Image 1 (cartoon, one colour):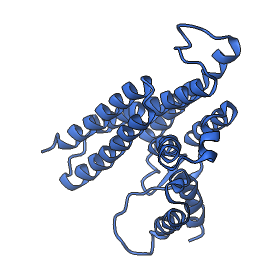
Image 2 (cartoon, helix red, strand yellow):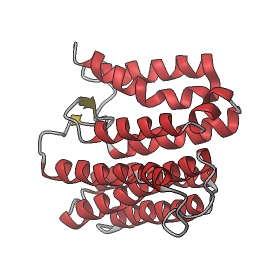
Image 3 (tube, helix red, strand yellow):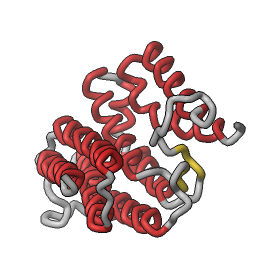
Length: 239
């Protein structure tokens, strides 16, 4: 049973790889659902490791390797495809260049997996991030990206479609997420050891804010999860 968490981590990696295949072929919605599946496996591998007390250095390293694929490379390719579409460039830029300006713009998605890898490397050697994080966790980065795809697809929102159709906004979005990952901003860890209010104030605030946002905006509340997470983290510092 000691290898069971590593098996679940491997499912995370497999989901991320499949997401990349779908994203590379332009099916961003299916790719986003596979990234969401990877997030579920990422949660379950940690949970199973704690329940089985099956911690290992291999598991720690495997988890980071899976995360960079599923939550760094896969969402980076989604951003690439969104930029590709917003610029009406429908062939691989490295194969058929459509001008220096377009080539430079399409390089921006590279920032995301690079900053994601730096964030994971720093996390692995930082022993102070047990109850709080420093910088945006890489799964949260991926959730931010897939939220605009899933919400845009199922809500048919003109606002979100305008967002994903704007190269400038997509580049700004990519830079902000990437910089947040390598920042030192204190953010909540969502690992819960008990259900008591004391010590979990920020987590309960996040749940309440997300529920209120969903009741008001429906599917359009999905892209608000990470901003609400950052707000809840800031409020939790007051307790």
